[in-house]
Every structure is written in structure tokens, then in C-alpha cells.
Image 1 (cartoon, rainbow, N blue to C red):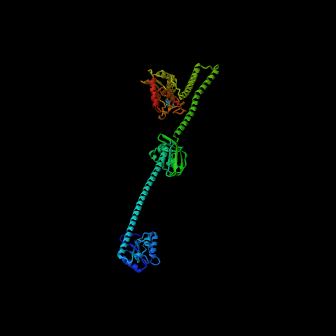
Image 2 (cartoon, rainbow, N blue to C red):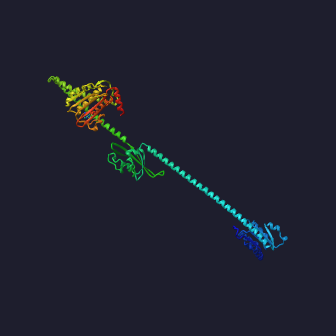
Image 3 (cartoon, rainbow, N blue to C red):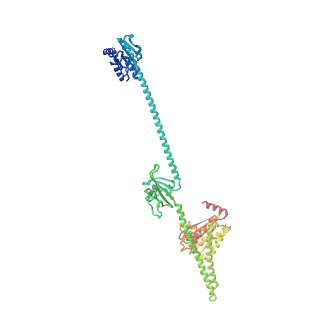
Length: 558
Ligand code: ADP
């Protein structure tokens, strides 16, 4: 309970005599306070249980429990220990046991009949004291309340700061975790990106490409994994191993997205001149580490392998063709030799009955010689293969006149040219000098002239040599079947031929040997041709060793 300055203050009046109480009430009424009356000590104690009083005016003489006993009990209670007690007594001054009154905690005592003003002023003093005490108590309470509030505010602020700090810390931790996660992912992607085998992550169902490493992006211009890329390369065609075109939904990425497990599915493509091949593998990665289910598509680029395989197959085919051709080539002059020798032996057996004229022997021997030369040339060519393959095509360089060589070869072939119906013309009037290997230069002219007579039979063949400042030029021109453009390059390679073997015999070695000799001497061999109208082979040979070295360097850098 708290008392405000203007509020009524409770005052307890205790007297067993009603007239005493009435007199007290009348005396104190002008003060305007709350006057509570009690007719006995017990009643007074009851009232004190309910509320505090500014002062208790206590009659000393009362039946049952007198004022002192009542005061004693009042003091015993903690709450009322300090409540001022004013004893009222009719006893004269000498009869009042003052020591008793003070011993039980009386503050004062008044003798009846009391002076109303004195009573009022005494009571007023206690009322003031009560009010002041109450005010002090309230101020203390207010202070405590303010302190409590301040404390609570500070606590709330500290709590708030803590919360802010905690959430900032949590955020930072989360950020760090996310950053670490992102770094981990970037690192993994960098590792996958650097992998030399094409790799992609595909979204199951939709077929969206979630990730594709560099090699996957480069494989078939990225069209194997990104359907959008196909729009940019409409000329790119995908096929299966049998060459059947594959629509987009049959490509590995789409098949894997549909849930198929691919284990080495072959896919091939052509893109203009380029070709490629890959084997596709796929596996499903289940939902894990916060990632949805994904399909891993891995590819094995077998383009180089396929090229090697094709080259090997071709090499085996060429070798087999060569072996059958070579045996046929060797067999033809051998058979002819055998027939002629058997004929000669038969004639020799019959020489007594039927003598054979010498001219006939000579003709037979000439045929035998031709066949032996043919065989020797074939064997020489075969030997050259192993020499060239082993890099042992040595040149014995000496001063050579190409005009002389050309005229000699032409003379050697005059009869064969006549047989082939090829009028042979040679333009080699002036000396064309250079440092070459005579035998090898002879071989170049021989091989080119042999071809001209073989593929240009029935039409003139022209040989020409001329000297330029740094090199010599040899030209062999025929008017025969000519060479298609697509064959003009490869005929200079080993075993390459551009005619069917049934129509034209040969090993496919002559031009290769010409090429090896010409380049070995630092020169070159080229061909110009109009199919059906003939061919012109041109050999250019540097004349001096310096020029040979320069040309050789230029050719090896090209
Ligand atoms: P071979 O004549 O034994 O087949 P070569 O290496 O000398 O081998 O020639 C390779 C191919 O080049 C020949 O098979 C032929 O198709 C073509 N060829 C060479 N010379 C001529 C030419 N003068 N006219 C037309 N085709 C030629």
C-alpha cells in the first residue's frame, strides 16, 4: 500500500470504551484521515494484519489484554515492528509505568484528558513521518524499478547485440561453407575440364547438359552433347558404326537421359572433310551430396584409332595387292623365259634333222635378254624399296650431263618406243650440267619414259631438258590416258596406282622412286595432265651442291 500526499492516512484508535473512541474520532476528524477503530487489543492486532497504520493510539487500561500486552504483540510482528504507538491513559503521571511503555516500544504517551490540539499535533507528526517514510519507500522502489528497467534494457541490448553477433557469425559461417562448397565444385569442374577424355553431366529426363568438359565441347564441334550446336553445323552428320544416320534422339546424350546404360556405343560423324568417331559410356549417379540424380556421359575419342585402323587395313590391302601383283609381274617374264628356253632346247634337239638359222637364235636370245632385263628392273625396284625404307638411298655425286643421259636412255628405248607406236623426240642439244648421281638420274628418266610408253602407247612421246640458272629441268610428255586430278598426288606414293592391273601391269613403284631420287637430290617432281589427252611429268634438280642443300632445306621446312 502506498500513500500519496493528499490521500487519507490510516490511524488506528484502540479503546475498550466507546466514548473514549468517539472522543478520539471527534478530536482527530478535523485532520481528515482514515480513522480505524478497535475495541480491544485483539481487534487492533486483527486490523494490523490487514493494513499498515501511521500511528496506533492505544488505551493502556483494557480488559483481557491491556495496552502494553497489545503493544508487545504489535512489536513482535515484523511488519508492525516500527509502527509508532501512542499510549493514552487516564492514569496520572506518577502512576504510568513509563519504563513499561517505552520497553514495549511506545513512542509517546498522553494522559487523559488530553489536550485535543496536542493530540492532533502529535498525530500529525506521525502522519508526516508515515508519509515521508512512505515517500522514501516509494522513491526507493521507483529507483529500484528504474534500475531494474535500466538493467533489463541493458540486458535486452546485450542480448540483442549477442543475437546480431550470433546471426552475423552464422551468416559468415554459412558464407564460408558456401564458398568452400563452390570452391570444391570449381576445383572439381577444373579437374574434369582438364581431363583429356570427353565427359558430360546430363539431366535425367530432359537431357539438359549440366556440364561438359573442354574435350566434350570440342568433340564434333560440341554437337555430340549440345543439341543447340547442331543448328550451327547443319552439315554435320552423325551415323552409327554401319553408316546409318542418327537423329538427335538416338545420340548418346539423349539415350543416356532416357535411362539407357551405354557401354561403348559407337557413334561416328562427318563434317565436311573431317571425320570422327567415339564410343559412348553412361552411368547414373544417384542423388547425393545435395545433388539431384545425374547421368554421367563419358566418351572415348577413337578418331585417331580409327584412322590408324583404316591406314593399317589399307596398308595390309596394299601389301596383299602388291604381293599378288609382284608375283604376277615376276611370273610373266619368267614364263616367257621358260617358253623361249624350252623352244630353244627343242630346236637344239632337232638341229640334225632341221638346222635352225643363226638369225632365229639371235632373235630368241634378244627376247630372252629383254625378259631378263625386265626381271632385273623389277628386282632392282624391289631392292630400292628396302633401300629407301632403310634410308640408304646413297648418291654418288659427280659431274653429269643430263642431255647425254636423256639421249642415252632414249636410244636404249628406241626399239621399245617403236613397238609401242610412240615416235620419240628428244630436245637435249646443249649440255645440261650438274652434280648428280648418274645411275639415279638415268633411273628417273627411265622410269618416266617407261610410263610414257606404257600409258601413252600409240602417240608421240617428247623428252626435253633445259638448263636454268640454279637448276636443270627434265620434261617427259605423252599423249596417252592422262591422270585424274584426285590421283595426281597419291601416284607418287609407294604402291599407289591409278589404273586397273588387268589393263596395265606395274608395281606402283616407278614414280615413288622418281620422287625419292628427285627430293633426295634436293629437287622435285610434278605432273600436269588433262585426262584422256596425256600427261607431262616435270623434274627439277638443283645443279650444285649449295643449291641442292638450299632446296632440300626449303622442302623440309614446307
Ligand atoms: P606403275 O606404272 O608400275 O603402276 P608408277 O609408280 O610408275 O607405277 O605409276 C603410278 C601410277 O601413276 C600408275 O599406275 C598410273 O596409274 C599413273 N601413271 C604414271 N605415269 C603415267 C602416265 N604417263 N600417264 C598416265 N598415268 C600415269
